[in-house]
Image 1 (tube, rainbow over the protein chains, first blue to last red):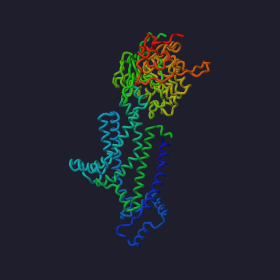
Image 2 (image 1 turned 180 degrees about the horizontal axis):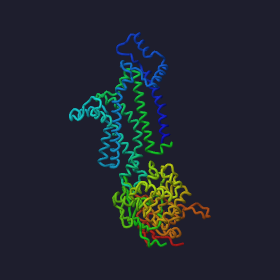
Image 3 (image 1 turned 135 degrees about the vertical axis):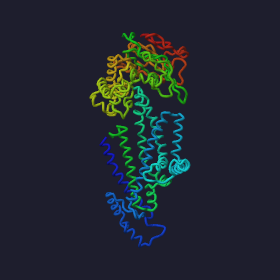
Length: 307
Length: 326
């Protein structure tokens, strides 16, 4: 198991390097630059600004400098938020976004797996149809529809939770955004769990467990559910990516000071360093969750460890 | 044989299994009857789809959800058919065990061999994990798994097919059952391992005085270890008797044809091996008379009109024109 884990971890670094390299050059290919505003700057000033940020150097040299800074943990200065470094901006927003995203993924697992299991065990019953219908809705409705709806119902009318906003340490501000973000993931995980559990329940080893005279509860929890969770675990990587993009919308709807907006604003403004910073952070995050999924895979199915 | 005096361990009467399918009901087993006495091994033979496995899966309560079972099966005096899962679990894995055809997929991949054997011991016999582990080790040694102490902590995928089938047998024997159902236990294994597993099963049956049902399509397997044999065709028993009688002097033309189609080591003939012409009947459209009629050389109007009943006492056959002793 240890050598399996080390091999997986070693695979992350080259992947991250490729992500950084590709994004660095792709964003430079996009037309425009950080200092092309509606109000055109005099060419001399623009040239001075570009020189100050090193943008007049050959692209490869800029790339080299960026990598060198990155290795030392320096994301560089933001071109647009002139008083802040990218590191400072991320340090402000990321904790909120992380809390939002990880809570959403966790909630999705905690709710989605039991719902899917219940639906599978009551296959073709009203319970099953009920859960699966809600799940289809959950997948179909985007966050910018469910978010404001939740704010309206649970915030404005019932007054259970704040409509929007953020106060550090106050968990009640997180409830509606987390639920909004988690809903499609819950739905997807419930569907995955149901389908895969139904398949596993028909396998020979489950029949063996039943032939042993074990209570049905134990047959399911001990023998069937673990292999049935493999597809759910594989979905963790894409789910993270989904939650990251989803958090852009949810953070806007609920006015959360997360870091999601920096990715969008940075890209629109051609704030090269900010975009790159966000890509590095979100890329590492996605890779980490994929890594966790890989390690879970090895735990769920011992055969995977020996490939 | 003095098995007649031994008490009946498993008594199956008029067992029928019907599957509800989208294309209508499919009758897999019809009026299956068989009694197996303590210390006796009964071979159940027939080709694929004859209903061998389904009969015994019905007894175990392991059929798919779309199966309807009627009739009766008793373990000693306890009825089995129609009982809830919780009630069946008092017997399954304790007094009544089953081993399956495919050892490669019949073990749980994410649990060690030791866990899988100890699990039912802990559950049914309510003993400590350590004691169950010790018992699991003893079982592995009884089923002649080499290097048993190390195997306890290995996963199924680390073992060979023959080894896994031994583990399956150890699981089945964990709580010292009275009846063991072996469903094609050697079909997935290569020939030398087959012989070893059969010898092991025969030895365990003898030592423990278990009743055993051996489901197989291989008459050679039956000849090796069974005391009696039941031949099934299209969901019914068509011939029943001691192995010696049935294999030496089959009365049902189907049994005779099956025997004729087996290659024999002492056969000096040069012609092609005889095969049974035609196909097994479609279980949705069984002929009104004898199900084997359309493939039988001795078929006549009686056979087409009425299905022959299984008659006789110890030696039974369901045929209007049984073969006479040659």
